[in-house]
Length: 139
Image 1 (spheres, rainbow, N blue to C red):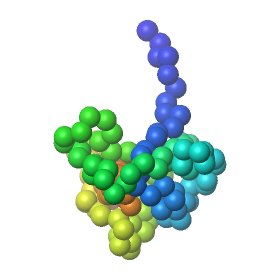
Image 2 (cartoon, helix red, strand yellow):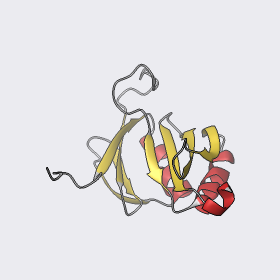
Image 3 (cartoon, rainbow, N blue to C red):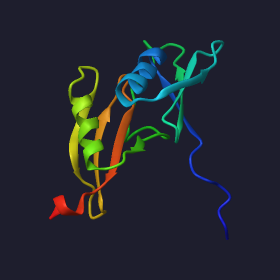
Image 4 (tube, helix red, strand yellow):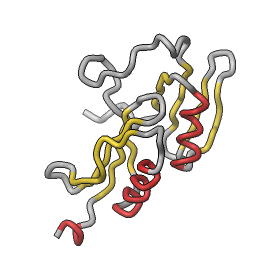
């Protein structure tokens, strides 16, 4: 059977501060703002490969915090980066911010030929960054 889908078009995230989250993706990761819906506060950002639709939580002060083990739905968002150098650059940018909690620095991803890091961005959404491992560095 052939697949009927062709990858991810966009991922929609509800966040407590739409503008702050958009500014994170734009300012830290180089995304571009591509659209939005003022009547349902949202900002759409893209890295040229995937679009994120960031939706403003209606009542952020009383919204439940993300619980990766107890909530159904998004566990984390994983974004690809070009290589180990790009992963190190992302880690450096994230580690320099007070509004990002780095869960773990770049490390091998199990037995796969990949390296990854995990963090919580402003608003609490978990984001993973994944890069091909450098075979020479893995030794």
